[in-house]
Image (cartoon, rainbow, N blue to C red; front, side, top):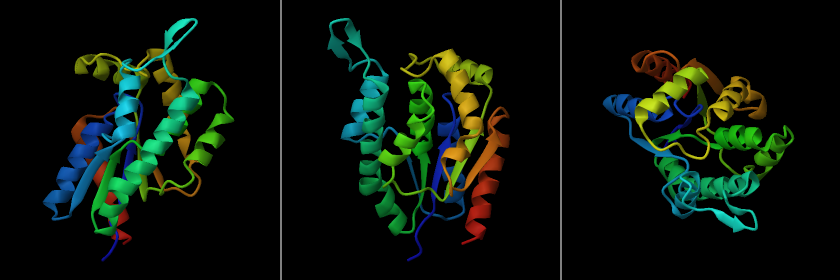
Length: 215
C-alpha cells in the first residue's frame, strides 16, 4: 500500500489553521481520499496536560507565588506529546494510506518556544529534542497580520490562553515569516492568511494537489 501524505498547517493564533485543516479534509474526502485530521497539543495524556497549562489550570507554586511552567519545560512536554502523537495516530494512519492533516506540528514549537525564550540559539535545541519526529511532506504557513489575528481571536470569544498576548503574537508573526530557515530540507509554503476563508482554502487545496501530483 502507498503511504499517505502528512500535511501540517501552521501560523499564529487566529491565522485560521483549524478552519483550513477542516476544509482541506472535507475537500479531499469529496475526492474519495481517506483523511485523518488531528492537532497539537493532542488529546492524549501529555497533550491534555499541556492544554491545562495553556488554559492556566496547571501552575507551579513557589516562593513568589503561582506561575506558569517555564518555556523549556513546555518545550519538552510538546516534544513528548509529538512523539506520542506520531506513534499512536499519525504513523499508523500514514502506513494505511491515509492522508493525515495536523493543525500545528514542530514548527509551532520552534516558533513559540524560540520567541518566548528570547534566545535565538534555543531554536537549535528545539530541533534536537524533536529530531526523531517524522518530517511532514508539506508544511503550509498561513501568514496573517497580527491585527487581523487579534480581531479573529476577539470574535472567537474564548478566554485567552498563555500565548494569546498581542505583543507576543506580533513577534511570532515576524518569526513565521522566515521559519523555513529552521526547517532545512522541509517543503514549506507560505500562503496569505489575511484573505477570506474561501480564498485561503483554494490556495491550500492547490498546494496539496501539487504534492499529490508528484506521487
